[in-house]
Image (tube, rainbow, N blue to C red; front, top):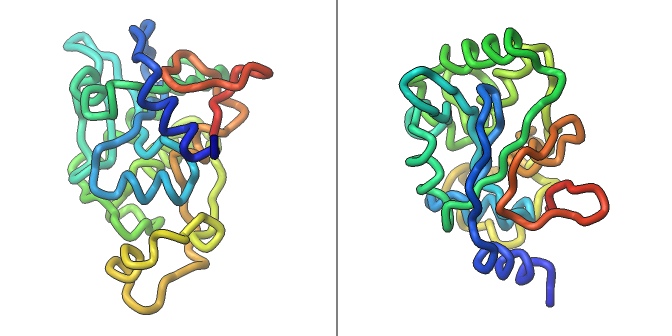
Length: 206
């Protein structure tokens, strides 16, 4: 079975399991039902198309996420927005409680800002992976994920969508960060996964 079809089959047939206790600063991923989710999945060969940061408060557990606009969403509502309620939870073992609070403070600083559909890297508008990366880099001094050039992704089925977004001159040299790149960071530990994992090292199967 081709790998793309196998990922689809796994996504549909793997039942979502109860999520263990979440911790502020955890990274949570799911397969979004947004309009651009299929394009992100195709470009990265991964079912992970959205990511946010967990914020545990006395009022409940929330996810800080860059959608339209950057906002705080109750975790169960956030989880329900993903395909079949499946979620991947990753944690950085080097981030103590004080560092995680600084991460959240940095993320909260961007609440209300618009979503960046053009995937720039300034702070005027943000996309999901950018918010998470900047929050950890500026709040805890931890660099997560790897910037990739747009042209290095699989754009074979995205021509019309890219031309609609950027016009005739598609910025193939644009550097961006994807949810799949964040999830592949070896510094992050798997806390919970409703997706397939590699039996050799327990990491997410990209």
